[in-house]
Length: 404
Image 1 (cartoon, rainbow, N blue to C red):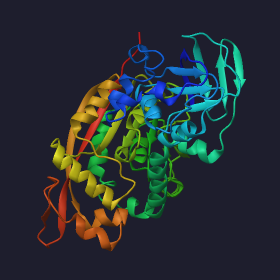
Image 2 (cartoon, rainbow, N blue to C red; image 1 turned 120 degrees about the vertical axis):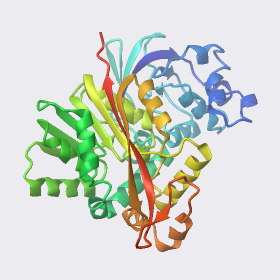
Image 3 (cartoon, helix red, strand yellow; image 1 turned 180 degrees about the vertical axis):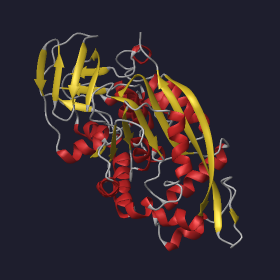
Image 4 (cartoon, rainbow, N blue to C red; image 1 turned 180 degrees about the horizontal axis):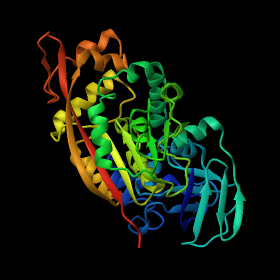
C-alpha cells in the first residue's frame, strides 16, 4: 500500500483527549467525531483537512486513554495515514484493528506543513523533500489486518477465502453466474473493441473474463481465493484460451499501474467488499482515461426495512457477505468517483432456493430461518413445488472522464 498526501505537522505527546475531547464521546455518530478531530490542538483542523492528507507527529502519539474514538475520528475525517516517531501502544493497536494506516518511523520526519509525502506502508518507507526515511516494518500478521481495512474486514476476507475455496465447484455450476444471456447482455452493453485490454476483478471462476476474451485482445482476471483461480485456470486450459491470465490479488489493492486497462469489470462480487469505496477507487485508478468501468451485482430494496432484512438473511447464509446495495446507492458511488454512467440496465432472474443455499452451504440448522418473504424478493413455488425467488441485478456501465 502506497499513500501520497499533504502533511499536517503535530508535536510530541498528542493525547487522545486532544484528538477527540471527552465531551463528544456520548455519541456513536462518526461525523461528529470527524467534525471535532484534533480540536484540542487545532480547532480549525477538521474544517481544513482534506481526504488523503497525512498527519506527521513526534513521539508518543495517541497517549492517554484507551478510547478507540480517537482513531475513528482521524479515520472518518479522511486522513490517509498517521506517521509518528512513536505511538502509544493502545493507540497503535486500535489503529490496526480499525484499519487506520499508520507508520512508526523511530525518528523525526523533516518536513513543513503542506509538503507532499509518499508512504510505503508494506516496506516502512517515507519519502518527502528528496529524503527517504526507513521506519519500523510491521509484523506480517499485523500488516495483513491493516491492509485488509481492520480486524473485522480482515476476518470477513478470511471467511470469504475459506468459503469460496470450499465452494468453488458449486459456484462454477451456478445457473445465474453461468447464464449466457446475462453475460452476453453485459458484453453487448460494454461494446468492447478488439484492441482492448480488460481487468476482471474478483473474477471467481472467470465467467465474465471468458465471455469478454472472445472480443478483446487480453483479459486478466484476479481474485483473492486460490481455489477459484485454480478452477478458472482449468476452465481456460480446457477451452484453449491463450489471451486470458489469472492472478491472486485483492480488489482493494490492485497491483497494476495507473491507466493500465481499457475496461475494468466486476460481476457479482461487490456485496462481499468491506471497503467498496476503495474498490471503486482502485478500479478507476487502473482504468485509462476515457475507458470503461463495469459493475454487475444483485440489488436490495430501496425500502430501508426490506433492504436491512435482506442483508441479514444473506449474512446468515454466508458470513462473508457484507452488503447488497439499492441501485440508487450504487449509482451514487459511481458519481462520487467521477464516473459518467452510460448504461444502467436491470435483469431479473428466478433463483431456486436449494441452489442458493448449496452455493454457500451454511448448514441445515439455519436454512429454515431463510424461508420468509420480508425481503420483497417475490418468494414463490414453481409447478413442481420447488421454492424460488426473484433475484434483481443491475448492470452499470460507466465512462472514466478524460482529464484535460
